[in-house]
Image 1 (cartoon, each protein chain N blue to C red):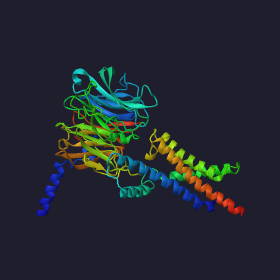
Image 2: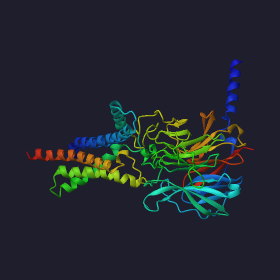
Image 3: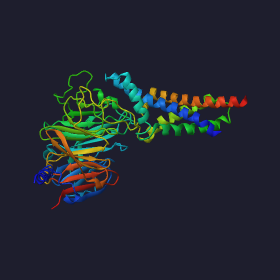
Image 4: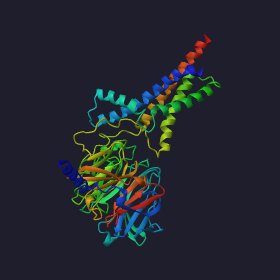
Length: 369
Length: 154
């Protein structure tokens, strides 16, 4: 009798925690688009319409589940090499009124074309064309590498914009210095100006747009309804992290890390240090986290408040159950699609996955009717 | 004849590998020390030992395998040249060893979007050091061959 009760309690807990969903028989899988060239970022601009970036430089539009064959015109020319290219797209919080979108991308430095920079632009989407473009951020100093851009964007509730900027791979030590953009999360106003309450305003030798530092390659960024900022970063071997990001804090890279270099060398023998933040969670072996979404939908009510992380290695989705701003559980989903580059929650509550590569797919995951 | 050179080649390989690995360790630890991380002597030794194992086993490419390919190709070329010129073997093989390490640190970034996968090779000073490490390994091998030649004459 006691055993039966215990089983009942366990089953209830499992159901309540959302673990009951996980078998692919529970979902309806629909391929929305195929043949996308390295899809990277997804954003919804209306309940039925989304924009998708292709790293190779095109911005694509999917309306009512159908890919518009014509890419959006007027997208700036990007540097497409390695991890460089057209990266993130997000819409303005007042998109319905102003039609503004924001794009992040890498492009050659104007003065030194062998070097490149991360750019963020604001533009108005008029029909199927971008107009009134304005560069609101350009990373400094330029880099010679085509890797580790971060390049995720998200709006805080106060209308300021967070930009993740990776360490450029070769410049990892710069993530600990405040006079550059390598390995930082930056906060700017949507017109490119600097908010007056940024944490390093007035500090000598610190760039005023820096919001947090000590990051490696943050490719996932979401803002919870209570304003909590979650970011994950693509770490070295065995050092991928999920962080709760606070202004002015140092997230340690590369002075502390749970990972080792791709060469097998120790990057740092330290995993903690006073004044440096610990991750909420880290992955060893690495999962290569590539994108993230916070689920607020009605389609899977048991998943509300969970973080969904797309992963390139081995290729799946990690559902992270959050409680009191802590990661308390992890479930692996959708292992059959290979490397997944990004994930977004649609307004109807379904999940949209973008698979990685030159023949990328957009996949919609809905609840079985 | 070739079999007789294997121990010298392995020692030469060990010299280059040891110098490359310990240089990477030193590069990382010197930087950590510069930002006031608590780096002490014991940590230096333990990190060095971890790197000597790690860089030859858990990385994307074992350092010893990469260097052995580089030195092998360079030494074969040096041997070919030595039969046609009168350059001292120590000089010739030192140049070959240096060239092998230069090729490794210079060519790897070209294959990986300018990424320097060996942390110690990210600065010009670091690259010069690694070329000298290769030259030292080559010098040892050339010296061994030269001694062999002298013994043969005696």
